[in-house]
Image (spheres, rainbow over the protein chains, first blue to last red):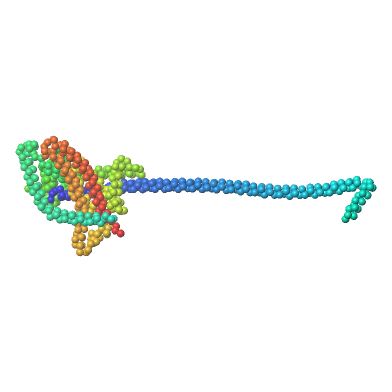
Length: 165
Length: 374
């Protein structure tokens, strides 16, 4: 056979020695620390990325929460304002109605009072008029019945009326 | 997975192809061996003739350029590391013979021109193979058969350089991780980290699934070992240039590693698929051998793929360079350089691609072995 394809024992021996030696030395002093370091660093990177992702999510969550808070605060404010307005309106309305009622009552009272006063005044007036007219009639009668003639005339007239009846 | 059926079909087809390939290989290899030995004999005759001619004439100019020899010398392993010209770096020779272990410098061979006699044996370098020389001055084939050459050859030395480089780079990067805990990467760290993450996220995770972490050290080591060695092989000057990943011995070891890791981690579904496949019982005599061959053929394919790709790349680059010397004209140089430049850029891609494919397929095989069927 061609010497090229005949493995020589010496080279086989030394290659085995060199390769196995290289394998053992590299495994112990190179591959283990290198692979461990690469693995560790990759894990660190993954972890960092995960953390960043989590932080991002947390941020979004916080932002959303803030938004919600703000929204609810705004809603609450609106509600309070609305309530206050309603309260104000109701107070005003109440005041208005009560004022109306009160006014009406007062007017009613005043009317009644006025009526009463009118009645009283009318009564008074009637009394005054009757007494005045009695007075006047007394004075007229006294005046007219001062002389005898006239008294007789009167009696005659009265008697004439009675006769007619 | 929806596509897993298609894939299984493909894998089965591949297995069949490889089985046929293996059969062909085993039948054909004696024939190849004969042809090769004939060629070698012819080569040696030619070299001898040239050497004689050179010795007699004393003129180097008349020596004919042999691209095959030059290229094969660069592709193959060597006991010396050729630096430039006639300067080579001698490397240690370590041989285990019946007489015991012998360690000496390859410089003692003086480029194969001299024999070296140690306390135990006399050695001779023939075609870059260490042989034992008997008392009669001839090569002692019987003793050579029991010689185990575990020398630090060029490829071994280049591989050690790569290993040292990888260790320095990655341990320093690991130090940076310890120093800068939890911080972003910096400098070399930021160059290496994307590749590690690429291996993890694009190779291991999608193919193996949740139990991928256990196999990461193997996958990363294989990936960077192949890649760095591929790229060092592209550097033409010392300490690069060796055809490390284009050597079948190295790819054999790597694919054996994959074979072991896949089969040692295979779960009961994996073994059931091999030993009791979902086919009518009378197909078992065909299916079980095919599946068993599949166990071997998958890493075998890995071995051949890496070896062939890298070797081919080196051969092409060297062939293009050789063109200058074949045509014996400087006018050829710009063309050669342009092609070499293109090939080198392509090889840079191939260097990464082959490392990626080896790792990807290893991860895929592991994934198939550890996949849980519900």
